[in-house]
Image (cartoon, one colour):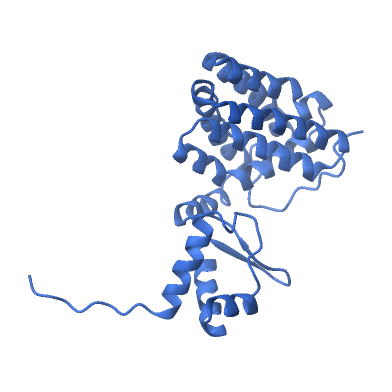
Length: 248
């Protein structure tokens, strides 16, 4: 077979590859602000236009998000994650919640079979942090703690694909949690402490069936609250919810 000329890799492409690697390796986690343009110029030893073009390309693919007057943030860890985020922005809250429930059922079952002592310790500490956040009355801290708790269950399943899929649902999950907290239901439905504790107890006991039942119980309760709060037509990517304090 005759040899063919190879395409010359541009400086912009090389910078894009470096930035993608930082994102994929978790050095720049999803949700964090990347260094400002002057810092990137200095660290990469390239021109300002090169950095600007590389960042613009990653914003276009959905890996980064430029926020006017604030900076640029990591939105997804991979092209696949960016595609999921774009799809979720067109999804209804309830649609995203149903996908979450399907993933979480399997995550709980696998976690019951595969969890390590380190996984259990992380889940117990996360559960305690969730309680502390609730008692503080800080809605945003509670939402963050709850998302973290459920991500740890997915990680305890020790299935990288499942954990990545669940991580990509985080933004949508935050939106649905805010909607649940805004619902006019008892506080026990808002914080669901007993239900979340039951999930961890079942995982610790290695009881996959009990873990699945516990997940279904608290997800069903929250789903009903979500329906009451928003109806079936509330969009994930629409106007942010205004929740205020979550306790009377």
